[in-house]
Amino acid sequence: MLLLATLALSGCWTVTHQATQASVASFDGNDANSGLVSWNANGSANVTQGCHDRFVWLQQHYGARFIPPLLPNIGLSPGTNGTPWIIDAERLVDFEQMTFMANNH
Image 1 (cartoon, rainbow, N blue to C red):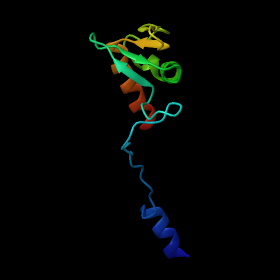
Image 2 (cartoon, helix red, strand yellow; image 1 turned 60 degrees about the vertical axis):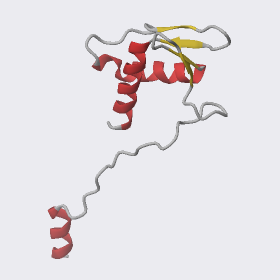
Image 3 (spheres, rainbow, N blue to C red; image 1 turned 90 degrees about the vertical axis):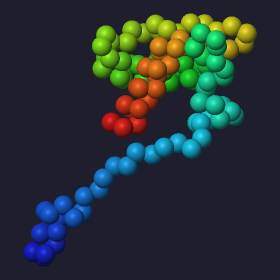
Image 4 (cartoon, helix red, strand yellow; image 1 turned 135 degrees about the vertical axis):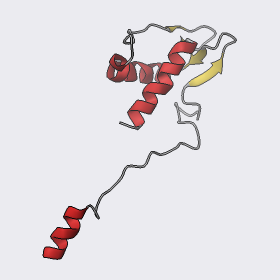
């Protein structure tokens, strides 16, 4: 019993978190594109409703950590040519950072 207590207190039973790296894009509907439909010449991207919803959720949970804090729907605009949303280049970078925060909290 003393040996078991010694092992438990010595840290031999420590479990460490290892970050995972995705080898393919996540599915948005039936497409493995993570909701990014296409890129525009100005650095913005056409995104699906699901991608927009993920951005909004991440912004609600992690947007206050930015300086200045991210404001709702800034950098998001209604899409054209059948794409629901356009996200500007700056918000794409914010999206990547917030995704990293969510995966490595």
